[in-house]
Length: 415
Image (cartoon, rainbow, N blue to C red; front, side):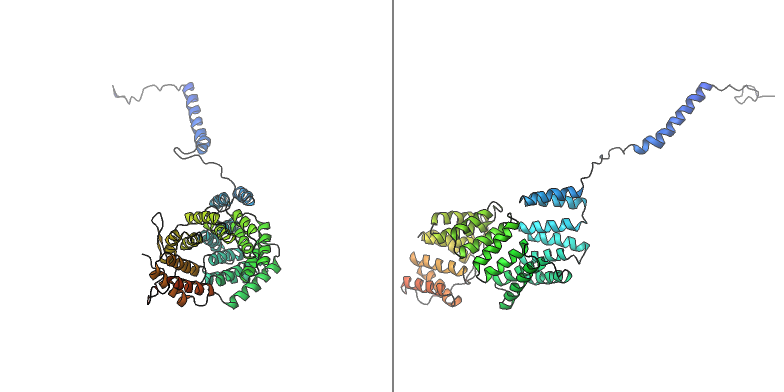
C-alpha cells in the first residue's frame, strides 16, 4: 500500500550514484582542507603593514663610534638614540650617549640619559660618575659630589670619577662657592686621577683646570694640549687652552686656540667673546669689536656680553655707544629683538669693570650725577679691588665735585 501522489512513496526506486560527481566532491574537500591547513596560516592579515627587517642595534653603535672619531657628535647622538629604540636596556648605549651630550653641553639630557642607565642598575659606577659630572657642570655641586663619591666607592681604581670630582670642586671654587679646603681637595683628587690614568683625556682636563685655578698657566696649557691630543673635537678644551695661553701671555696661540673652537660649536658665544678680549689686549680694536658683536648675536640676553662690547666701545672712545651697552649690562634692559636682559649686581671683576667703565663714559659725556652714583657704589661695594677704587676716584675727579650727596644706585634694576 502506498499513498498515491505522495512525495514519500515508499515503493519509489532510488537514483543510482554518479561516480564522477563523487570524485569531484572529494577533490574539492581535499583542496579546502589543504588551503585551510597550509595557505591561510602563511597569509598576512588584510590591512596590516608588512613588517620590515629590524636593523641590529650594534650596527647603529658602530656607525656612531665612527662619527665620534670624526668629531661628528650630533649625528652620532641620533644614531645612539636609534640604537636605544631597538635595545633600550643596553647600558653601554646610555653611557656613550650621556658622554656625547656632555661634549655638546646638553647637560640636562646627559643627566637624564645617565639616570636611565641607573634605573637598570643603581650601582653602575660609570653612570653615577656621568650623572655627578653633569650635575656639577650645571652648578648643583652638592648632589654632584654625592654621586661622584658613590662612584668612587663602587669603583675605587677607576680614575675618571676622581677626575670628574676634581673638576667639579674646581668649578665650585671658581664660582665663589668653595674655600681653600675645597681647592686643596681638588688638587689632591686631580693628582690621584692622573696617577691611576695618566693618559686619559679626563685626567688631563681635570689637572689642567686645577693648575689654571692655581695660576700655573704654562703647566695648565700643557695639560690641555695633552687632552686635545686624545680628542681634538671638544670645543671646551680649546677654550681652556686659549685662556691659559692668554694668561701667560701668548696671544697668537690663544687666538689660534679660540679660533679652533668656533667650527666645533659655531653658535657658542664664548670663543667669540674670548677672541674679542684677546684682540682688545693686543690693541686690535676693530677685530675686538667684530668678535664682541658676534658673541652678542649668539646670546642676546647675556649681560656679560653687553658689558664686554661696551668696554671695547669705550676703548675706541665711542662713549655714546659704550654707555648704550654698559647701561644694559649694569641696569638691565631689552635686546634688539625685544627680549629682557637682567642687569648685573655689583661684584668684583669682571662686573666691576663694567661698572667703572660705565661711570667713566658717563663722566666723559657730562652725565655726572649718575657717574658719581656709580663711583660711590664702587667705593662701597668693591673696596678691596684696587683697580675699581682707582677708577671710581677718577670718575669723581672728572666730574670735579659737580654732584654732591648723591645716593648710591640700586644695581641691576631693570627699567
